[in-house]
Image (tube, rainbow, N blue to C red; front, side, top):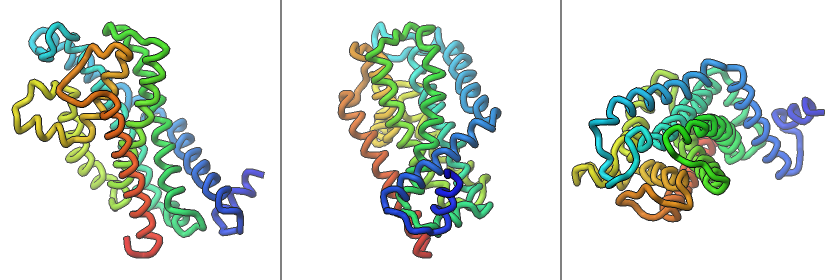
Length: 279
């Protein structure tokens, strides 16, 4: 029955609009999950590399770097949310590489000409990457008590919701970049040029309050700064013990959500342009 429905989806058989939309999203989401499950190296790379960075950098600067937040956290604790952001970022990169590969192998071309909306294509890929990213983020969350970050039921739920929001935003940005790329090498170059500096200037390594004025302004216009701040706050929710020169949690979440919506819409427009032969 499932194979028949999938065949109907890609062959152009007439189906009600909503079932086509949901089936397309589910099919692309499932494909991303299966691809991840079958690639163990991807799991190890996206978790172990940030984990090693967290341990080595956090331990190395522990006695010589001040977060500038009074009697606040140790440096290992301070960069914990930033490391979780890096896991989400790496997962977004690995997930959206499949967009380049699918286009090169011809799969994406068959999806684009299928009778489904561009929104379904974008959401299927983004939700697949988001599911993987959130899962890996929750695995890293197990280590929070090791750096004196207490995880309560409230803070866990708040962190889970924030991880979903951030993962959608990061995967959406990755999708938009990957859609225009012709090779994985070019995609990696752009991601390293754009996303890694965005992460470094998000408050992951050092707080905004301790940065030079010109650098602080760059951090203020960086949407990842507000995502990192939101994640830092919800980890301690409802006790906002870690603060910085940024808006409160609702504003940080609103900015992150707005960025995610913009990425989804922008990606859907890009896919639609290709459907019309203009992209």
